[in-house]
Image 1 (cartoon, rainbow, N blue to C red):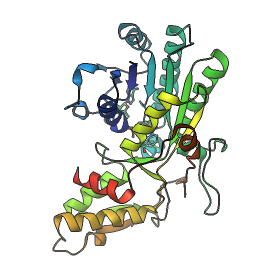
Image 2 (tube, rainbow, N blue to C red; image 1 turned 180 degrees about the vertical axis):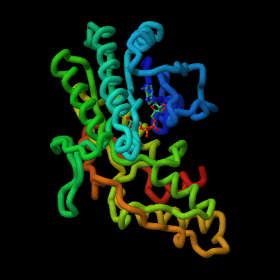
Image 3 (cartoon, helix red, strand yellow; image 1 turned 45 degrees about the vertical axis):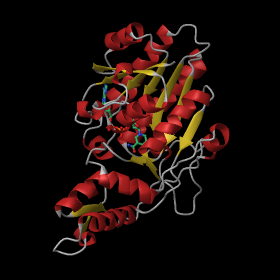
Image 4 (spheres, rainbow, N blue to C red; image 1 turned 120 degrees about the vertical axis):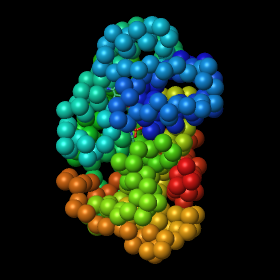
Length: 324
Ligand code: NAD
């Protein structure tokens, strides 16, 4: 039975992970979350087995607090989600991204290095990262693999790249038992409406303009959040120490096509509005500076080594998300 410290467990993916692990494992879980604008206590309501979960309100940069959690809860595993995660915010105010994503990660690594002096055996530090560290792809370029060189474009992806390097360095320098996953765009329940899919759903429901950056032809790989949680669980179970695993959904539509699909699903589920189909609400707005054009991720390593592959199709996942 693992005793897992889940940082950022009140956020979008972290809270889905807590629900998932209480359903699918016998682990005991401690959430550490600063409850920034992105963390919501209600994301952790109605847990499948709340007796195996504890919540601590605090900052991953708080050294004393982090070290005391390792001691008080005999933590043997860290799954590190906590981050500033929104690219647009990182363009406006990058400072907090460096504090949390880089300094906070190092604080957690230091606690693990100090509290797990005998690193043989059961300990594991799993770092949750993004495919954005690899930069952008031209239309004909092959998908990102685990050996694609890092080439981040935004302060957000640069801060995540820095944290990935630190995690790897702690493995190479101190032998800390780490794993890293670099995942594509997640969607699903509990995501904040600053991100494309929930923003589109809410605006389309209210009959408001739906903003689409540039020409809407940016391509991302989309993964339903529960599939991401399953991938992390399989890395905890069978992933090799020091290794990186790319995680993706194998779905690569253009942003505009995602927005159109959501409009169609809503027209079908709640009826077409008097103004006409919701697609007419789409409004093209000035593109984001440094906006990466295309991401595509090759997840054959986790598929062949750990037998993980995404279960949800984009159509079914979008429907579930709209209904939620
Ligand atoms: P989110 O913004 O929804 O949640 C982040 C959580 O971290 C929030 O609960 C917030 O309160 C908490 N937090 C922020 N700063 C903190 C601090 N200093 N101390 C403690 N808690 C703090 O993010 P998300 O979309 O759930 O992403 C989680 C992780 O997954 C991030 O590391 C992100 O880089 C990575 N990731 C996200 C995606 C995606 O599509 N959302 C894709 C790949 C990787």
